[in-house]
Image (tube, rainbow, N blue to C red; front, top):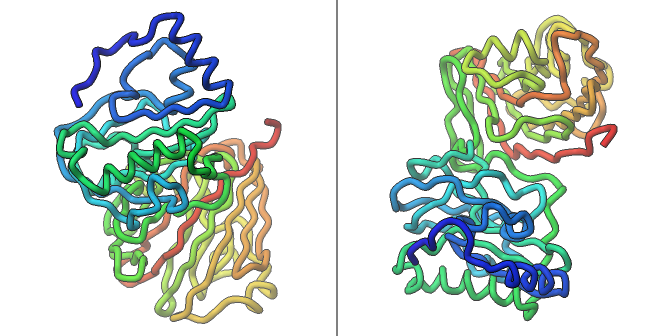
Length: 355
């Protein structure tokens, strides 16, 4: 499907009619280059969900399906490999639309959305229904049964034949897909290796694997971690983007994972700032070789840590040189002798106080 010339493809009367039909409970379905037009028409930008910005050469990529309840994706497995011209978008539609599928940017060359790359989504907009998919540039796409079923499901939703929940997802979402480190970036030496069963394991260091796809303000981060023995690692929060792992140490806060050390440097401590409640922690801490779960909640300058469901630390930042209200999250690979594993890394964004 060749792209229409950028610019205007609707007259003013058509624009008015489109806005009216949307408000009247109508439907919209956009395919591929539908995101590459009408840049000056704010209603349309909201309706399509995001505007095109660039694309690399046509190539194979892995699509990861986030939602199997929608008719456009119900027939697909968790992963869908296909060849197409893959668009990058100016903004991420996740805030206002239900993301149905994303692109794994580690599976192809030329993705620019830092590892959170929606490629199909739906929303209710001004009283109407909107569906968009970024696939469909190549003529071969339209002979592909899976892609045609994807389009049919989008059309069934847009025309109101099949109902679907297209509210934006405000709950927890996985930010480690269990198969690649899409969305994450290694700073400093060492690395994390993805193992079977959706687990990442630290090697070497001292480095930091940080989630570069999103700068965070107010959120709950959940993850499971496991040590072999007296190993060392930590979860960092509230640090600026950097290729230097020491930046997170100096400008953020570390929630420590280490079985043996001084109280302000052991499991559950805000490293070197505040010890965990040791009594509460020891009642719920599982020994090395077993999985433990953290929930790390950041709201304003307050940082709360829950271990296996029990609150073990409650810390408030008062250092004007540091701020928890803007920053990234990361996982430490501490050194060659330290092997720590992580799984089920999930993020839920919370309302910012004062909004």
